[in-house]
Length: 458
Image (tube, rainbow, N blue to C red; front, side):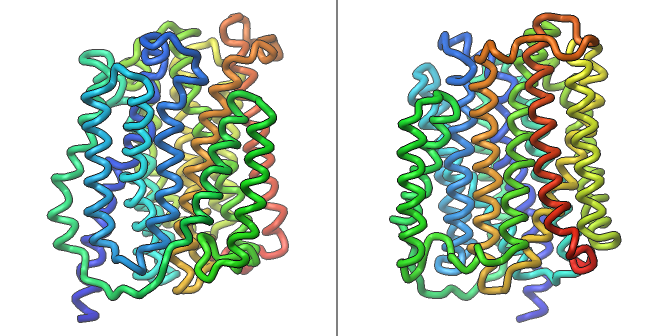
């Protein structure tokens, strides 16, 4: 039986990667269509960005929940149910896309279903693959996820330009085709009895939603509600028999730093990527399809190579080396965009290759470090919380950047080389995001400076 499982796990991992591609694809497939959606409904970018934020918020919550209950209900059953939810949300969006509230609800339902795959794929790797080989596995997963995130704008731009953005809701239904293959290759697994801390989960989720509303509307009472809910969440997990998040995880230094830094870096890049369509439309007057195919396509293709290389480098050279390389690529790409926001689109496209590559490296390192800090019985909740935090940070990053795009206080010249008035805002915001990446990277390098030897063995 053990040999049979070992033979099937790699196959199931491949099919999970296929599911992950289509699941994460929907995180960014609407990106280049956001200006079109804003124009159709007559709304500001901060409101239009909620088309993505609503998806990512439920996506983030789902990754934590699915990882938490995977030991209770089993991976097979959860994937089947989640894909039905995913497809149901897609059908609602396709049929009722003319009503903005229903559009947001459909995206929220999509995220709730799609989140199962990233949440469960980490659990499978952590439980089924030896630590010395997890770098390659996470590199493979990171490549697939990043490819889905990068390919989304390309496909989304083409469909929005030549058909209509509402048909983007049809894509998720393709995941149903992969289900029979996945369910056949994944071995049966033992399940255990347990429960889910619904109260704790609700407190945390509502706290995040309140904070996200604060970052876009800047109403202080949203922040007050958010802080109150987080205090309630902390008190709840300390008393609950089976808390939504095990308090013991927060005593693990590597786990906390990995989750925190991962959230900062991934959230920053997600916010930047949500800004690109607006910048290319306003500064360079590009069409939706050209933004996806011409500007984002090179970065999308490079993700495959960077993900594979990053996974191998983690196993051979250590996590610190790959993190430094990833931070260097990210910082270089953001600096180029900030300096040359109004110049050739090929400069922007080349910078995005560096940013996508750096993102692949960073994701691989964060996953490897967090997985290495967890015991076998902590893998479900630990990796689920990592996914939850990172995807949640992406949603917040998108919401924050959407809010900043409406702030005229950022619309002034900093670099003499940027001469187009329309590019001032985007150049300055990119510079702000670059500073955030530098801060996040500095935290990682400072914390792990004393643990360099042990970190490099991850």
